[in-house]
Image 1 (tube, rainbow, N blue to C red):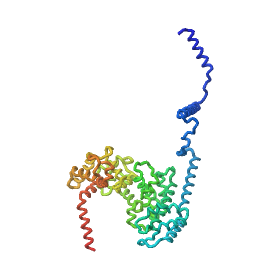
Image 2: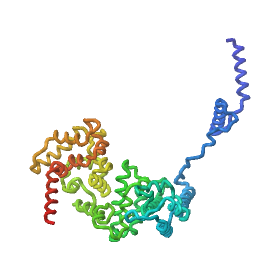
Image 3: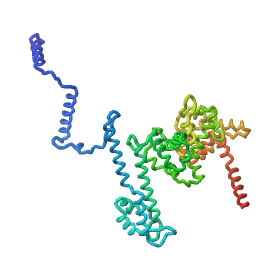
Image 4: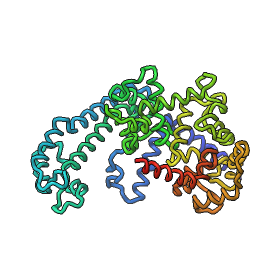
Length: 456
């Protein structure tokens, strides 16, 4: 290339650089222009130049939650929720309105009685719906009537069943609103502290808990809350949906304590009763021999009949939350709930995790043999004739009938309805002995019942 031509290009470049204006826009402005240009060219390419983009018609469905430092927005949100819940509460039937509804239903009953129950026809049902008031309209539908219609030859429904249905619905909505008041996050779930506050404030309204000393309240609340979280939060997220709380029977059991004449048997079988809570806490104190408020593995080995195997207890302390190798009351409650409810999927999940040493998601012959060896050793200590593992293994697989003939999954245990028996065989000498002698025990029970009959 000649020298003259090179000089010519240099001059051209110098002139262009000299005349070019310096771009003084910020990065944000450049990005905005780039986005606008992209949108323009993309819209033209799609052929929608002058038309309104369809995405503009999509309603907003996501609203960001206020950040911790946005105090005003947080207060506004809390106040809005409180007003909303108050409005919903006013929409519910109060006691006077429920009494009026019962009076109207009774007034429009249609003879004859069905046994001892008053009945109402569909025509009268609709008439009551028209005069009962605006709040009642939701209950007087064909769907509700059909749901309660059974085998009445005249096509009527029971007034009592319908009224109970209305009462149940009102109670569910009241409880839903009551629980929502403790939902600090406003996301439809309760954290552990939220549920603790709810139950603590509920205690004075439950006559069956009148005898509890205030010093025991914190332990009672911990005991009650633990059952909710053990069964309703299997993934241990630290929160439970309010919907799940309403769907399970635990709240019914808790509110059953409003009954001042609750029988002794009902109290003993109710986890939330004062006798039950005192029993569980009393057991914990009795096991705590050194009175340090925690349980060592040796102390826990005396739990129940004292026949849990050392191998199983080792796994408990390996997998569960401990403090310097000792178990606190909350962890103990999970342990008790698992062992006392071995038929329930949540309890089986807890025990299965302990049995699944290698975290494979299934139990194989090696795992079964590992735990059953400890049962065999205990049998020798108690001078019992050991049972061969081969026989027990075959019985377990016959009971469970797993999809894979060599592996037992948690789902296999749950589906077989034999999970409680299988886990008892593997972790508890007393449980194994009960299973092994089940036929003798059945005969003895039968003989005992017959002798009672003879005496009467």
